[in-house]
Image 1 (cartoon, rainbow, N blue to C red):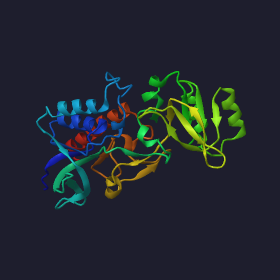
Image 2 (image 1 turned 120 degrees about the horizontal axis):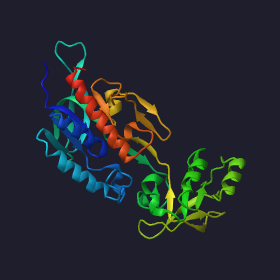
Image 3 (image 1 turned 120 degrees about the vertical axis):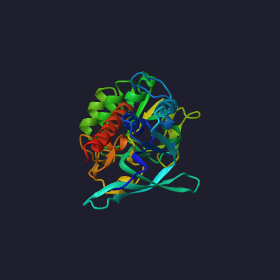
Image 4 (image 1 turned 45 degrees about the horizontal axis):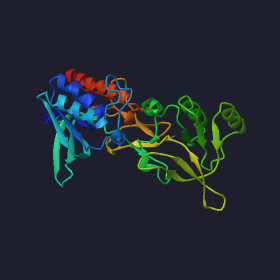
Length: 318
């Protein structure tokens, strides 16, 4: 029979991971949360639409959740990155039981840990278009979700960056918050019928390539277009630009463990069942890495399901 350092190790300490850990802590299980300290929402000044926390800084919300989690005596929080996780064979059993994990603390020290269950809550990385001035405004005036940040720019000049044939629908959605321009950035795949429909709805269509974004600090004042001949062209004034970023898991651990992934509209997602278990027994996943639509409330709810699922598997010997 194997013994373990922890009943569960949660990899990722943001909304999903801390929500999973809370369920396990309240079930009096020994749970360790490993976090690298770089949550996806660190670029945003405020989180919106989250129950009871509208307008709060996401980093402050995470810190408050950490403090409350540490009130439970069976909880350990560790700074660092899990660099490997492998199934741990159980003597006399026909299948693997538990996992060996290696933690890198960021200062060159590697620490081996063992656990009965794993919860992958490491989130995703955003793949942003290579446009000058875009990356440094991400989360401030370059945005991905109107439900998270649209209200703050309501009635102002909005832009949508073309990303796929669904961009026309994206522009229609954003236009509910204010006057909108769809920037094709040189793409020619917009059908004439759709262009006509967008124009009829009052949505401007700008076909030219983008030279870069301009504005003071992280604010946005306009999109500079490339003129014929390559010189900087005119400036289209806007206050916020919506970008559908591609996503990928923020850690290779799911693939390393053999978890199946499904292709989502913006990138791969870890496949889970109703209890948030992946295709690898004993490995659970929650948060943006499992969702095709990303939202803080949904990530937290997924964490709750994963924590409960992992605990019940311990009770019933799954």
